[in-house]
Length: 207
Picture 1 (cartoon, rainbow, N blue to C red):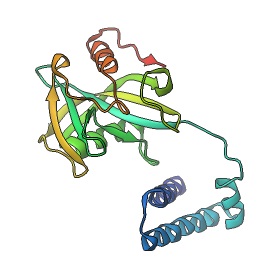
Picture 2: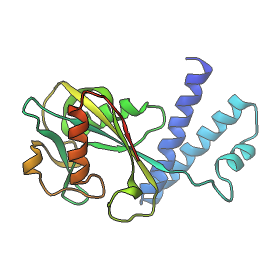
Picture 3: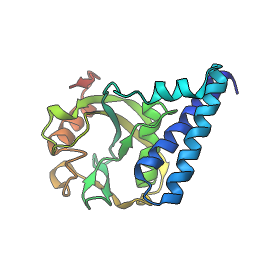
Picture 4: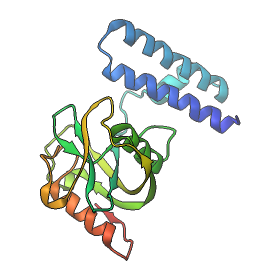
């Protein structure tokens, strides 16, 4: 493993620890995630030949520069042109599979991983269909500024089954869509993505 791979691995550990600190409610779990974060900072300091205090100031400035969060999703059709969707446990509604971008994975890798984890279907990324600025579209309001990357993915195997944190997985036609999780996807976006998929111009929509 070269130094770049080592640094990427350390960044992944740091990202996992910070995600844990955001979601963990148990004090013991939070303490373990904080320890993991400090270990990652120590490893970074060693690689950078710098002090841990400098890195802490770098990663946790008093006034952080705000940047958008990135949501990556996969658009998958079966041989009947039905859309692969997952039922969210958060709101009991349906969306195309996807989630937050993970440090250490490319965007297309995230789309493929999320599809398999949420629906059981193995896919390969074909091309980028769209980059949506969520605030430009009529999603419900939320505190984060979010970009949505949508990849067209092709089924290569797997078995349709809901992921451990999903309530269901199934295929739906455009004219018979289930109740959508509008925090994650809109009907107009599904129609737009379907149109882009069938286009022979292979354009990528943005904004």
